[in-house]
Image (cartoon, rainbow, N blue to C red):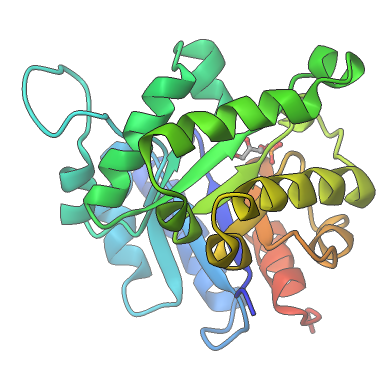
Length: 255
Ligand code: 13P
C-alpha cells in the first residue's frame, strides 16, 4: 500500500505572520495520527521559520526548487545540501512555472532530481501537458519525454523512492480540474512507463495529481487507483480547505 501524500505548494506567497497562523491552523485541524502524509513546500526564505512551526507535528517540510549544482558561484541559488540542512524532506522539481517562466529544460530538471536525491531529499518531479498539447493528442508523448529525461539521469529504482506529480498545465490556477477519469488515465500511463523499467519502482512510486485541487473535488480524485494524493497550490493557503483535502486523502470526514 502506498501511503497517500498531500503536499501544499505555497508558491511565492506568505509572510512571517501569515505563515505562523496558517501552519497553526493546519496543525490544529489535522490530527497527527491521520492516515496520510502531509507536507508544505514553502518559499526558501521561510524554510527555517516553517521548519520550526511544523516541529513535533505530522507535517513535513519541503522546498519549491533547488539548484542542480552542489556549491559555488551561482548567485541566488539554493543547493540540495542547504535544503537538507534546514530540515527539508521534499523538494518540488520541474514545476511547470519553473519550466515556462524560468526556462528550465527537462535535462536540467533531471539534474535537479539527481542533486535532490543525492542529498537525501525526496524529489517531487512535475510533469504535464499544455492545453494545445492535449488538444493535439500529444499528452502521453509530452509526459513520456519529460519522464524519459529523468530516466536518462537517474535509475528507475531511484524514481521508485521519489514522487511524481501529474500537473496538467491547463488545470493549474485556473479552477479547471482534470476529471478523475482524465487524471487516472495519465497516472496509469505514468506508472506503466515506470513499470517498463522497474516493476518494483512502479508499485512504490507515489503519483500525485495537481491542478485546481480543492475541498470539493479531492475525494473523487484520490479514490482513483493510481492517484496517491495531491500537490495543492491555491487551496493550500487556506487552512480549512487544506485540512479538508488532507482529510479526503486519509479517507476521513471532517467533523
Ligand atoms: P493550483 O492548486 O492553485 O491549481 O496549483 C497547482 C500547482 O501548481 C501545485 O504545484
